[in-house]
Length: 231
Image (tube, rainbow, N blue to C red; front, side, top):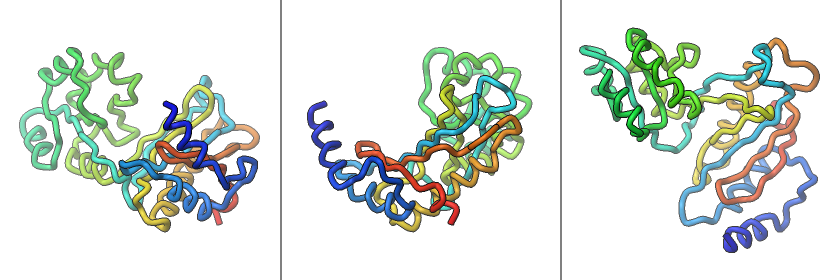
């Protein structure tokens, strides 16, 4: 932990914690501070003026980032017969029906996205307590309950990001890798913020986007000038 503390301390050198940086400057700082031996994820955190305890203030959705996330996503698909074969051909990592449900109930969670055909939701519904807390429960509004498993798998592996506001009104997401060039990171961040704006709930009052910050996995956080994102 001491080494992480030293790295963060070094990363904050030259950063004004009270300043709101333009998106271009923030990306440059984050990339420069990402000095780990692995390719760090660039993460965004948004503080929203909502109270998700109220149904009309929930913020949830999905966005396919223009340049992907740089992350390899393992996809599990609940499907039978022809749809199961379609899923395998489309590149699904795990495919099954009742057998897959039993594996998940037994603790197998070796995937980051879960897709289901509509006829399988009777089986998947029984896994709500397992998949729900991990934000893995298939949902038709997010395109993960669909007969078009090929497109759903393609989108998941191409860099689709699901988002959901947490209790404190915060949304977190990975928007790329530190190895991405600055222009691609800027484009991904703008696309993500645009998706959050479009997902603004009817019950939101006052300032919706209150604060946005950017960081890398092991690096310092930088506050963003919200106006520079929409510029």
